[in-house]
Image (cartoon, rainbow, N blue to C red; front, side):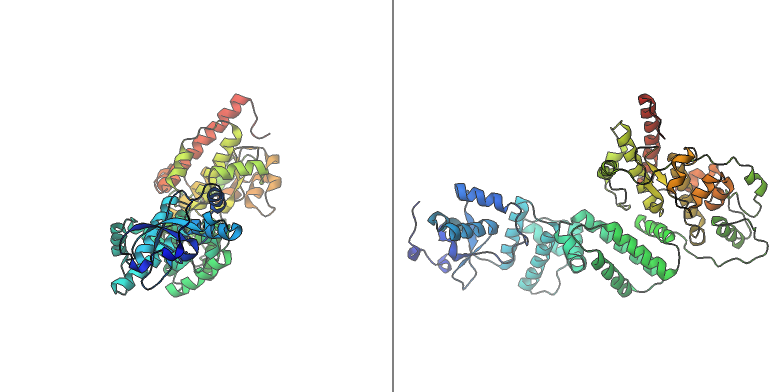
Length: 527
């Protein structure tokens, strides 16, 4: 290698066209606006390669007007840093001199966008790093163009013209990540939180904000204060959106002094773009109210009276309900249940799909679940739990579904829905939640499984435990609004969103597959 005479190197100010140079690494500076803000995960591999074989391509450099040193012009910060480190470590002249492609300076935004394009091509740039670079470029463009605020639509056009195409939607998500989320969850974002997670947080933000305003809890500023505090509380490398959602639900429920399950149902409706009635009824003290109406039946009867004393269709406990007929109903059979799965099965369940994702589930996950290939019981049970948990979560009763390891259908129900839901939901929504609970109970075989397999695992104050242990069908029917099965179509099937409908069909299909697999293997599901 021929080492040039550094004194003979022409000063950068004299260059006004692209050219090749061999430069001393000490005369090249790292680009301080480099989009990659964390260490390149490939640093050690690149360093080993350069130590062994040298650089495989020249660095692109430029020079700001009035400066004598060069600056990396389009990617290459990592390689320059490695060369400088190797030269310092070894004093080897082959790491001191580097082939460079010089490009004349135009404006700062051009250099930043050149780095952004190069980093994007090489991959590994985190979503938040990319987002910060885009909005730093926006700020530079505003300064260079002499305008106060560059619209996202115009920014999209300028970026495209300069060879860096981003959709308006993606720019909007980046702006939300930079301006709203980065100040409150920096650890989560810098640990790799990507666009899908940011989209889900934003959807939750919008839905919860809408519910906050609909319930007249305050203005945007008051919601922002709550949202900020809760985000900061759960910030960390292992970000969990469900923790944030649960905290928001608790906050709203406590402010309103209502059931958290009611808030979950309302929030799910907001996420799905549905409107539900949320009028909380006052206690009805009329003397002609049926004494036996408890839990859900109180509110259903009250709603019927307030609507002109019309019994809500399908309510077996309405104003004219035949209490004698309810006592003759065959008692429920005994279910089975073991709450905690072993570690290996729980891992298998969780690895298939995250059942606690909100209504923004990706189409890919739904396709995976809608076309199962597994035929072994362990995988089928895991799939059943995933589908059941996802359905329950999106309908405000996610805390009632628990995985079941090595027995039954793969999941169980811990209890009946919270009785206060009846006072806080309109009939259509309450009907959907109630009928979904019964569908899940049927798929989990809660009333046909062996009693000894389940009762001991339910809490002592569980209504479901009391009903099963005492074979008290009336208690169960009074605790869960039990509609005429003929209402299933318009109370449940017609109201379910597309994702819920697909999950329900898949759950029933999985139930059938589990029984077929057990019969083929001559296995008793509940032993």
